[in-house]
Figure (spheres, rainbow, N blue to C red):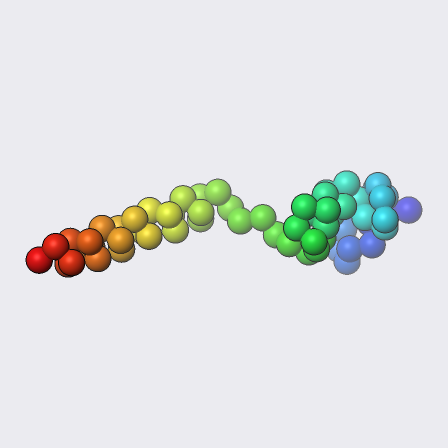
Length: 61
């Protein structure tokens, strides 16, 4: 038996899912959640820091 998520050939683990999709369903409420790339998260965080720094500098004038 294999995972019921379309396109996944993982071995059945529980409730119709492979272990990867079962854990995603357990943690996030859906087996279809994709994890964000760590680089993308860091880039967004740095961009937000730059935006906030500019806003603070504007408010100080």
